Structure formats: structure tokens, C-alpha cells
Amino acid sequence: SECAMAGFCECLTWVLLNTKENYDYLRRDVDLELTGKEPIPRAFQKHPPTGAKSPKSKLAAHDAESLYYPYEINPVPVQLSNPKTRDFEICRTSLIPCLLKVLQSNKHNPPPIKLFEVSDVVIQSSLAETGARNERRLAALIAGTSSGFETIHGLLNQIMWSLNLAADFEENVNKRVQRRYHLEEIDDAAMFPGRQAKIMVGDVCIGILGVLHPEVLEHFDMSFPASVLEITLEPFLEWLRE
Image 1: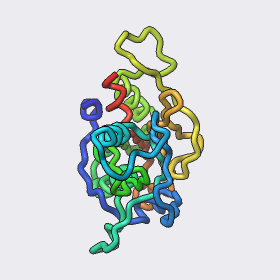
Image 2: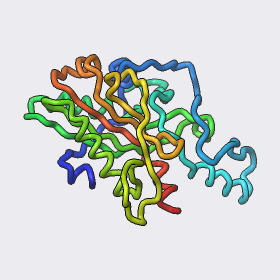
Image 3: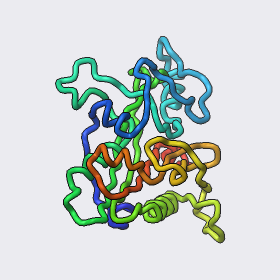
Image 4: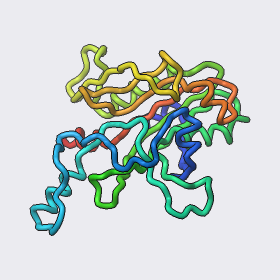
């Protein structure tokens, strides 16, 4: 709702796409031979129980699944064994390329163009029985005559505030604020150097934001600058229960 109130239009895109769109067009690399190389979920340091599922082990497995993972910039995708077309050969690991495809189809509209999506990505997971896990994410994009970084940063602050988080620099916050977040520098090839950051809550990375690299925009036939934001919503499911 915060995105909609800020003038962003909601999108609903396909979960399937091709490797070029998911990685190459974003100037990111991935080793498709890797399987399940992922960070250990927070507060969970052991593999979930295997073998016969007693009531106690089922409860332990459920608890393990409810624990959250930090945001991954470049996780290993789930590949389709027999795709009908090469346009849909993997499950997306980010919502950003999907928003860029929508932007490409709507570039005839007057700027600024504001888009957002709340949906799942699919990531390989050695800790899941199926070998993969869904992760709910939120992504937003703004494209126009300027980069729009200030707008996307302001949107982040508003989203965090609605989820009971405040920035480290904010003072005199009310009692409903449960946690603080801050930005740290990163080096993501998809974004412009020096105009990108990861979003941290304590020592947990929950997302990224920044100005997209010109080469990324060229792949999607865009001639004007754009900024993006993407966060995982999984940690908030745990934090809001506290």
C-alpha cells in the first residue's frame, strides 16, 4: 500500500524467464553447476531433521522452514528440465528483470514511470525437501528524466516505517519502532558505481537499492536513467510476531 500511495503502479509478472534476462542483462554471473550454495538461515545452525518424521521432528522441521534467510544478490536459480521455449528456462531469482521488461513495454508512456511488484522468487536450497524454496520479495523501480534515486530512497524509508523500522539517523521515533536499519556500500555490477547500497538490519542484509547501470538499461532498450529497490519480506514475518 505504501508503494501505491507513492504513485507506483503494481505489476504481476511471470515467474519464469531466461538466463540472459536474469543474469547477463543485469551484468551478473552465475555458475549453473552449483546447487544449494546459500547462507544459513538466521537462528538456525543445523540441517532440519531427516528420516522418519515423528511429531517432534515435524515440529522442528516446521520451525526450520519458518526461519528467514538474508537477501541474496546473486543466488543459484532453479532450472526447468524440459522447457517448452528458451524464453522460460529458469525460475527468476530477482524481481528486477521482470520490472525492467514491463518498463520496456511501457516506455512510450510519459516519464516518470513508477512500477512495483510483491511476489515470489525461487532459489535453490539444500535445506528444503524439494531442493528449492520460495522467497517473497518487494521490488520497485522509477525511470524518468533523472535517476530518481532520492524517490526510491524515500520510498524505502516509508516502507520501513510502516513495518516498524526506522533509519539509524532518525531521532525521536515513537515506541512502535522495533528495529533500526542502515545502508552499507556494495559492489553490484547491475548498478552504477557509488550509487548503490545494501539495506542492513543489524548484521542481516534484507535488500538493495541503487541507480541501474547504463548497460543494463541498454539491454532493455531504455534511454533514460532508472533506480530500483528490492527487499526480502521473509524476515518481517518473524519480526512482526515478536
